[in-house]
Image 1 (spheres, rainbow, N blue to C red):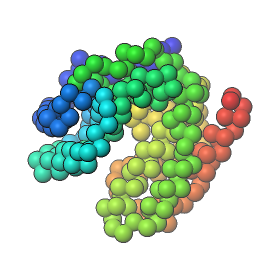
Image 2: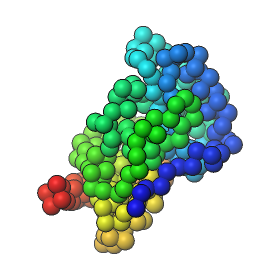
Image 3: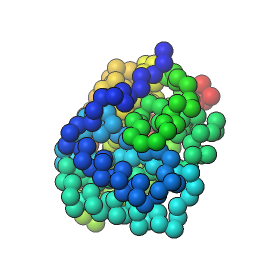
Length: 255
């Protein structure tokens, strides 16, 4: 069964369309002929963004590097979003070169992302370079086999968070990662793909109902409610380490 793709004809939520237009204008003005294509991913692409809480997540593909004005351009876009668009928490931009994306080596990374997680909003859609994908362990491990590294990084971020705001920000990021990694662990059995973190957790529980408490706690972290550091670290150490071990076992069994 081929995985579903996001409908490019379905309009974005009206609250986010002005910001998308403004960012595209900045990118066109700053990159000119070097700009190849632009994509939206995340909750805005899924048309499920929450006003005042969601980010605008984008992929910008260029024909050649733009190191000379990269920092200035991206920082300007983020600053303008913060000043004039309170409907988003911020703008996140990933960049790539055309020859990196349209490459067989990128089939499970950029190829899968553009095909199933993004909507092209400008330029030639590179998702068309790739065929249909089916749920597989290859997809799961390319996207989440790094969960152990994420746990290490975000455990430190949470321990060292100097403010409530930074603590909550770190909680949300690692909660998203663990919920998505949970579903990816069973994707080869479930034969579907979900990007929404809570949906990932809900479907994962069909295969591991004994982890209900852990998924519920990840949902609390994802909600943005500040939780004592000791409790967050306990969850990362217990459920996170279990998840890492399950990935290692599955990789050993499936390869």
